[in-house]
Length: 196
Image (cartoon, rainbow, N blue to C red; front, side, top):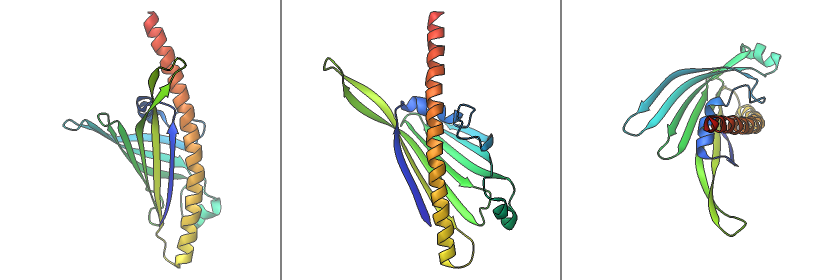
């Protein structure tokens, strides 16, 4: 098993990030054109805890070489099962995703969390103000399940971690554009509502 991990801070409040998260694969994200469908399978609210649990199926266009698809008998689309938990009281979003396609050959289990980071800023006249940003933490555990030599499994895992890292970078860039567009659109709407 190999592990990929990444952390960054988005310069947006937790409320903005947790709301924009549902639009992560929309047309505002030009880095996620490989995502061709997002289907919500279930959504429940646990009344005692206030945690919103959502289960989704994400369908993607494969970017694997044709010879790999032919050798493994794969289709041109792949599926990912995602379960997310939004805890508005604790201000934490947790998403756990698992690949469904080729899961008998390669297991990918990704966990992502978004949580607020409150920073105190000193203004021009010395006054202090709070500035909320959002911590993003990502971890993917990748395990090659194919038989054979350990060396082959390790190579598959290493290549998968490298590719996962490249895709994760694109994903963060795409989500930044969704966050920027959300802030602009919601800001314009807020002004329009205030004006009348």
